[in-house]
Length: 303
Image (cartoon, rainbow, N blue to C red; front, side, top):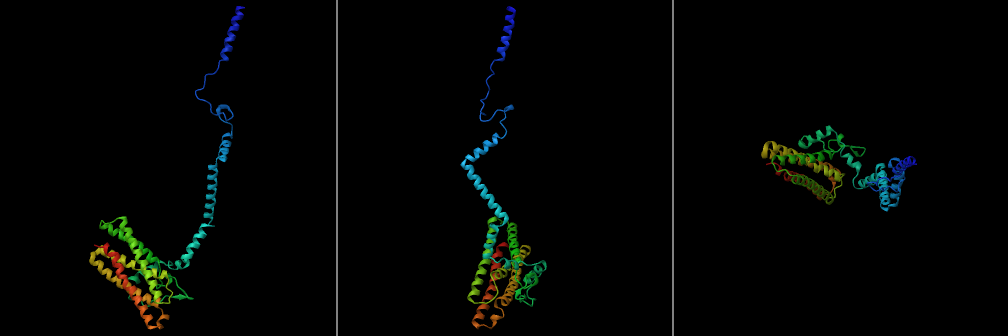
């Protein structure tokens, strides 16, 4: 019995060792909402379902989703060009004629070279009339007398860069001064165009001149300004005044001949004498005003 008792006691001790409780966990188990899987991972798809239900139940998430879908649809319209492009084009076309604007930029290299030579040496040019084809003026690349906006635009940019270089050489450069030079030059041209439009209206001149024509003729002065500043930087103030006198006189001659052909025209030559005088004074005033603007915008760049 004792032997059997010893054996039973050993078996009981083994049973008690097997039935001993596990040691307490170091951290509490917070994954009660998930079904237990081997390795402690949740059931497949449980986290996805929980996230979707949480988002659908959150009102802020619903608002964000609705706002994102509206942005996506608006972006699709912008890419497709169904709303934004057409609206912008109609707004631009309402204030600016795109076809007329393309006409003033229809230039090529040969035209630009010849037109620059005409602006500097206009005295040998004979025919100043704008050429027409079926009552439509020829583009600048086919007619040297046609005004363009390419040369004034490029000359304006070149003038601003040249002004920055001149101020940098004199150690007077600053972004504020350069911005002041650019804005002043642009404001003077706008004021000149407005004055010419008012003068043409008061003089009751019948011509094909538009705002683009006047802007082109007024912008040609930047070519003379560039030459004057370059000569002043290379040869000092004496060279600047010589170049200023030459470019101013050439521009005055160019403006008078171009305006007498374009603004006054052959139809207005038979009008009343007071009107002809007023038109002549308008042309001479526009030409005489050019040297003053050139000097005012360039004298501070040469010392």
